[in-house]
Image (tube, rainbow, N blue to C red; front, side, top):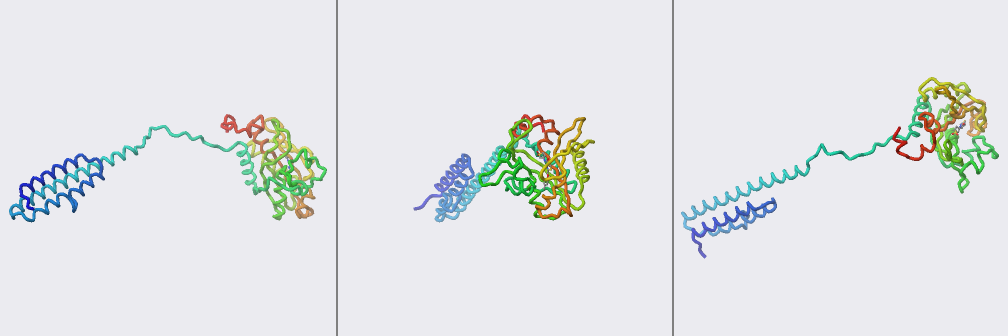
Amino acid sequence: MTISPDELETQLAAIKEEALSKITATDTLEQLEQLRISYLGKKAQLSQVLGGMGKLAPEDKRRIGAFANVVKEALQEGLEKKRTELQAAQIQAQLEAETLDVTMPGVYRPQGRIHPLNSTIDRVLDIFVGLGYTVAAGLEMETDYYNFEALNTPPDHPARDMQDTFYLPDGNLLRTHTSSVQIRYMEANEPPIRIIAPGRVYRRDTVDATHSAVFHQIEILAVDEGITFTDLKGTLKEFFQDLFGEEIELRFRASYFPFTEPSAEVDVKWRGKWLEMGGCGMVDPNVLKAVGYDPEIYTGFAAGFGAERFAMVLHQIDDIRRLYNSDLRFLRQF
Ligand code: 2U9
């Protein structure tokens, strides 16, 4: 089948019109690529038309060939122009979608803070670490031995009563003081000892403004050759001076604890008032013997404080329960 040069020319012109109008109407790069393949690819209409040129006379071939090139270039140019346009539009759309509005209000994140009880404990630890003490930790569930027996507390001592201590079904108990930490530490270490044991303790107390069944103690212990009550007094003076940040006065009142002998209650005079701050004494020789230390060689002092009491005095908190309620109106003040 032969085809006339004029017909070929008309076909080429029609292809060009159709292709250019389709290119103009395209709005995605994928569609545009499909158009490129269907008009300029190997199996494209344009290639098929050109395949029919073989039988033309030489001068017709030249004329139609030249026109075919014009059509091809027009299509390439149209495709290229559209591609540039679509790519620019795509980038623009992306830029608009990713715009950062620096004036937009932020997402509110409440700032956490250290609980006043923890910050109080941290301050006390800092002071004693500054004096050369090591922080020691132990167990909240203890055996009768570590909580009482090793601490020279006789079986008939009221602290061992069911009314005062939380006993567990297996015969263990919830520690009533952190002193068991010091017993375990001494068992594992030789003098000289300088440790501070902070932690949660449990007592069967009726809850009121100054008592809680669960509270926190901080106990210190120093064991060495030649330690005297004077060392205890000097250490406590240094500590309370630092804690209160001003000149304070100390007062020792004779007392009794099973694990210290002699024993005393410590009061601090701050801003004209005497405040009961804790207990202390020289470690009872029986306690030293229990951990295998020779009380003829070593002596030691110990003191115990309630962390809640410190926090309450330092921050003028009127009720211990405020430290446990998690009331934000209270906590936000610290
Ligand atoms: C060992 C030997 C002795 C620690 C001591 C106290 C006196 C004391 C109270 C303060 C307020 C308990 O939290 S509180 O109710 N503590 O009065 N604590 S002597 O004596 C020790 C500790 C460990 C090995």
